[in-house]
Length: 349
Image 1 (tube, rainbow, N blue to C red):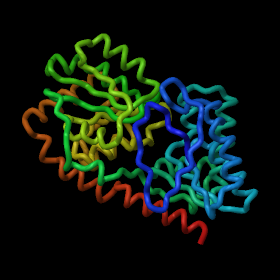
Image 2 (image 1 turned 45 degrees about the vertical axis):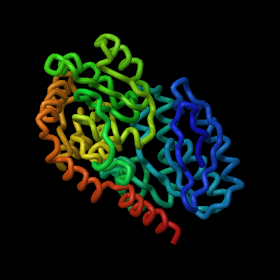
Image 3 (image 1 turned 180 degrees about the horizontal axis):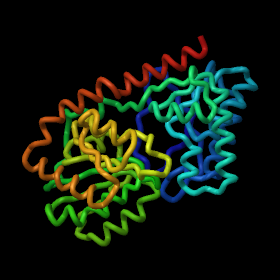
């Protein structure tokens, strides 16, 4: 049960065997995002009625916790178990955005209640697991499954984009806590060493206005925002890039995050430049997926220029197979999905 996608979203093939997708309209902002309490309620309120009359043995709820609360209440009324997929810690998220105390307290209460009552909780990392336990989840019910990507689509073999010159690519969400505009701010320094280089963004999010402002200052189409593209096209851009860019703003409560875009880039063989600290930086550093640098304009610019140097010399080819093989073994959608399914099904056996 999900939403009707925005008109600007690329077409998605959901005709998979045995899967029936139920869609319902939802309020979105001008960028097509579902952001804010009113937009969440526009999904959660109809969801309550949809679930009341749906046939199911177990429900798996994704964030936000308000959706988890709806699933919990309806499942309790129907005496059905439910699982909660904690891809994020929303209490920490609203704190990092400077939300009012009342909002923080309300979010903590809802998230804690959902975590305590879920028959199974799926977590994306050990750091997130520890935080979920602090918020009330029972550790024996939490399974750390990690993030997964479709390694059939995101793979080193396949068509790659040719931009006529080396380029760097950022794909996916550009939220406040990711600080994707850092790379746009670093481009002037990169262009001093590589005047023909280009930085391409694909996705959407709150950082778009700041990125567009930087792009206008740099000029000459050196920074390009390509909007939301199908995953297969994103993979083509990643394969042809000198490096894929990932960032997490440090010190605002998201140092535990491991963005999925890291795995997608490495699965395509591209070196990852991760700007930030914490778990995401350690992931890149410990598994030779690329380079982890400080979240500063100077550090990002140096890493971006070095990646282009290596690309021009052909030095990126040596590690592509190794990066893709690591993702296949540790973060493929099949591997992670199997672990998640085992944990969810175990809760109803």
